[in-house]
Every structure is written in structure tokens, then in C-alpha cells.
Length: 311
Image (cartoon, rainbow, N blue to C red; front, side):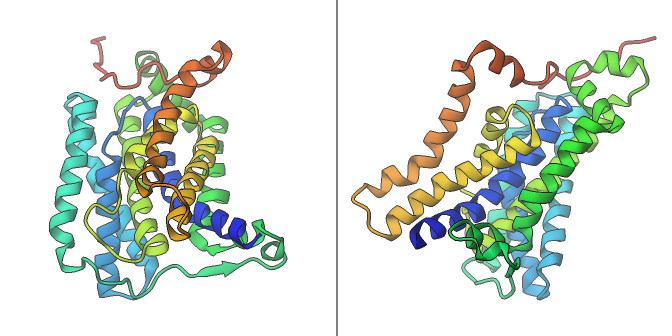
């Protein structure tokens, strides 16, 4: 029982990083913008959070700084792919390499230095006493509660129950029709990308302020790419994306626990589990029943620059 509880607890922590990144990607892709810069923005958020903690003992300031740099980084993608209408794929990949490079350079001064103040666990009375799942889900830091219980609900409500969310989804499905009825296509796309960047920055901060409280170059280790794949697996739905992050957190936790406890499995195999799962996330929807494929279809205008026709 203790092993299962530890496994779930590690899954919840690890999955939170993926869930935040995937949630931001859902918002960007719902507006028709394919943001492949998540990996780089996560890396920037992670290192900026640690650098902020070097100057102040308040993890919330580290989180805010990471979100700010994530939003600013996403502004580069807005300029390139939304305003200048360059290839979204190339722009996103370039942003990833830019983020990884910048974070490697500015992070040298804090590499390997443990973070002095992190988000500490906050136990929820009664719920935390539930066997197995109690300690795993209800004896976590406040970011975990926000990631799993607050943000996905707010994002779902905003996307599917408000006029603003309807406009955003319309921009991702048929920007010309949305523009014809007065929806500000370019502004909404820019806003969605920046919100996605802020959440990617938060994801990086979650990694260094709650999961692994130290910065090292390359520590994001493909989590941004996995987050992008999770969006496909989740059918572009916020709540499902967060749950998918938890599922992948479990896969990661299995690999970690296997190595820590000396399971008779090659560490190389355990380390590849998350990436094998990523491939599965892409293949499974393609092999699903037609009805399921339709429900999980990408926004029709995803990846397509919008050119406003003359009137």
C-alpha cells in the first residue's frame, strides 16, 4: 500500500508539469496556432524561477517571474507566426531552440544549487487521511491543487460556456467567418498564444519549485514535446489534457520507482517509457473508431496563417 501511495504521489507531482504545459497548448491550438515552443518556454520558466529564488525567498514570486518570461517568449511566436504569418512549425521549433539556448547560458550561475524555498505540501483535513489516494492527492503543494482542481475547470468553462471562449474556438475553426461577424481574429490568436506561454512558464517553475528543486541544463528533458502530444490525445479538451498529464506522470513515476528500487528491468527501457507513451498518444487516436476520431479532431484552421481579405 505504501508503495502504491508513493507511486501515485510521484505521478501527481510529475504529471502537474505536463498538465500545465498541455493546458496552455490546448488554449493556443484552439485558436488555430500550433505552438511548438513549449519545450523552450518551460526551460526558460524553470531557470528564471530558480534565479528569482536566489534573490527572494518567496516561491510565488518565482512562479510569477516564470510566467512573465513565458509570456514574453510567446510574444516572439506571436510576432513571427501570427503577425508576420511565418510557418508556425518553424517558428515554434526556433522558439524551442532559442529558449533552450538562453536558459543554458543564463542558468550557469545557479546550476546545481538547491532552491532555498519551495512550495511545501499543504494537507487537506479528512481527505488526506483516505488510504492510498489521500496522501497522494490531498497532501500536496498548492500548485497541485490549482493544476488538477481549479485551472482545468476554469479553462473548460471559459472555452465552452462563455462568449469569449466561443469566439476563440471560432477563430481556430473558421477565422474568415469569425472575422466577418466582428471577432478580432489576430488579437484572439495573440492572446491565446501568450496565455499558453504563461502556462508553459508556470510549468517550468513547477518543475524547479515543486518537483526537482534545483536547476540543471536539459532538465526539462522533452516534457514540452510530450505536452504537445497530450493535446492530441486529449482531443483538445482542457480537463482531459490535465488528466492525460496525470496518466503520463504515472508512466514517469513507474520508471523512476523502478530504478530507485532496483527492478530487474534495464534503466534504458524505464527511461524511454514516457516517450513510448508519447508515440502511443499520437497513434491511438488515429486507430480509434471514426466517431471518436471526429470528436478528437483538431481545429480546422490549426497551423494556418490568417490573411484578411479586402472588403
